[in-house]
Length: 296
Image 1: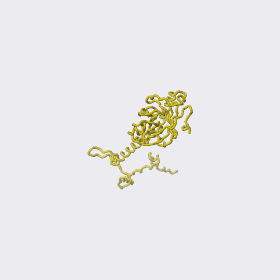
Image 2: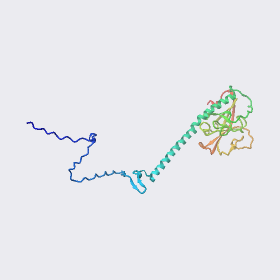
Image 3: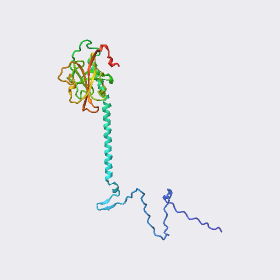
Image 4: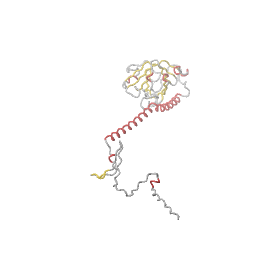
């Protein structure tokens, strides 16, 4: 007689945690006589804070479980103020830098474009032939130009700069070009041909580099008028006598042919005026070509 083979007991069914690779919980068989002890809560690590997850009832109602963490403190408010102030200062600094960049470089492009337009206007007014005009004898007294209209060309060979000068010295007149003081002499006349310009890179930015003996050339319809610098000085804005027919002596009658350039001083400010005085050296007719002072 073949003895019966006893089958091994079936293993306990696996729960979902076992299928995922986790250790399944140990089933309580109820055989232990020792009372079950509650698990000890984990101790917080150094630097950690235990937050009460259960809401607490207070006299004002239930208290949020995160109220202690989100409540602003003096330190958090100070940090917020400092952070906000820093962001405002950074933004303000960027705006100032952009404005300074526009003042220094951006305006130069705009001024150059307007100068090209003024050059075209002056060429049309003088005619296609640049030699038109008297070549000998004194030049006739020109009619006073209209405000804002081109008057003459102004060249400073040392700075490698030249501009078209317009009539008038109001902010609108000298916005894109140096301006001629309306009551001062015209180029080549006895008296003081006075010109004002902004202290920007597109115009009189480097005017302080001029020294005695440097040339300033003025172009009219038929002549090149060459002046030589004889004085540079700094004055207060109210000292308007610098553009008088005799600079510094408004009550005297002029006997010389002078040129005066004025601009703000120092750079980026306007509480002073930089003044350049020049005296007529010689005149050259346009029929003789460009003067040597512009070729070197």
